[in-house]
Image (cartoon, rainbow, N blue to C red):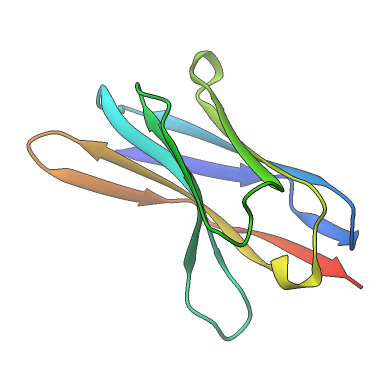
Length: 119
């Protein structure tokens, strides 16, 4: 089992920055991925950014490329999402996600953190 706890959400104005953190605990397989999804009001959850471990390969949604950066500190069991040049359309609940790969794939979610960007 893996537990994920997000922090760092809040209310900011357009153009400002936020950094989200997700601390994970429990047993992660050597091959895993951690990332961020978001769910805007009345819309479906969507991928924001994901990083594979141990390769470090990343994947970003087109809407955040060049503005958001995902990073990971394995020593702290933490994955970050640095969000710059925020726009009102970035307003959403942001969820941390982890997947472990082995004989079976397991998926874990955090509780979510609200990000609100005002114009």
